[in-house]
Image (cartoon, rainbow, N blue to C red; front, side):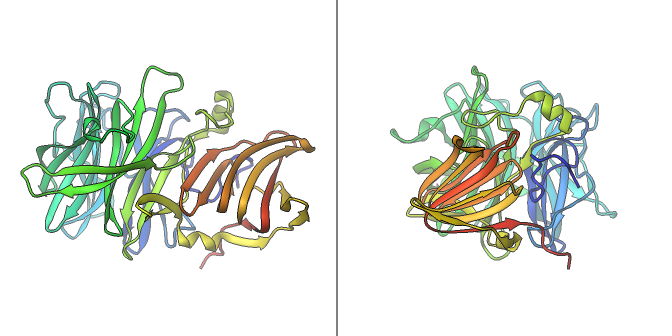
Amino acid sequence: MTTDAHDPRLHVRAPAGWLNDPNGAGWWDGRWHVMYQWNPHAPVWGGIHWGHASSPDLLRWEHEPTALTPRPGTLDGGGAWSGVAVHDRGDVALVYSAVREEAVTGTAGVAVARRGRDGRWVQPDRLAAPHPDLPGLVEVRDPFLVTVGARRLGIQGAGTPDGGAVLVYDVADLDDWRLLGTLVTAGDVPAGLAAPGQVWECPQLVQVGGAWVLLVSWFERGEEPERRGVTAYTGRLDVAGDVPRFVVTGSTPFDHGPDVYAPQVVLAPDGRALVWGWCGEGRGSGAVGRPAAEVEAAGWAGVLSFPRELVVVDGRPVTRPAAELAGLRDRPLPVVRDDEGAVLATDEPAWWARGDDVEVALVDGDDAASVVVWQGRGPAEVLVDGSVLEAFRPARGGTTLRVYRRGAQRWRVRARGDLDVATLRLPPEV
């Protein structure tokens, strides 16, 4: 058991080293699987592998053998970057960005790893799609697949001189992608809607409740720290022509906090759209920072968010906690009443709360030393695990924050009216 007070014990994180984007999420062999970008050698980015965890119930996670490994001198010698798991030919394949040279733009292509007889993935010696040789196109990567009718399409994120873009491919054969053109660019987004970012990464295209939703993770260089975020677009998918097009009709932030990025969506067997994101170490704007020296001492960096359900409410894509997470709730925590409503003070490392007009703060000694971390009007649900805080409002969706308690700081939770609070713990082994 870890002694790191900031360690999220209930989330998926690597055994050690660096973790970033979720990859390869899905259901097969009777278990949930989620993979992630991983540097097993140090808590910094570099030498990217695919780590792998699995679960019978989205609650209890076990580490699996490494899924993908950089192979020096080959098509993925610079790293196995982001991608997805797909069902193909009666089995599961991993479709990923194979990067020949780690820090060199234009060396990423689409590669497909298939399972061998021993159940491990065998990485290929040829690309399913090379880096497109198109003028002005930069940083093409992060394959995703979607089936429309009987047609399977592939998409990848990219950057252009005018902003982000998503490319579209015909993928009748998973091992041979055929570039069709551009699905959508920042220039296609109607005036008045957000279209930030020099590059769009990790595009995810999914139909939710009859509505098409496109998630793009974007970043803009030139600032320190790098400005980035995730935009959820709604729109119409037009597949009538030679080049499929996504016609944007609306946009909203995927999350309202600074500490989630590169979400991956997978359709569950019951039809739900489940999504995980990468929660970095909280050095972004609006979060309480964790010094690099502290990260090095801990030996790990980065964690995946709790699994969420992506839904569309009044035309807006929002996330809510996966229903299974109710299974983490344990013993109730004592709540007292004051003139403002209900209040809880606790130093529990993992807890859940639900109420109206919720405010979460860190308190050191008395209210005069309090720091408000998050607050929201109306009904809200909050889950805290170590340094990860995920808050949800029904019509607004999620807010993700990395919060690091210092010294004698405790959590204080206030709500108008009733406040339900419980500790979180892993359920017993079955």
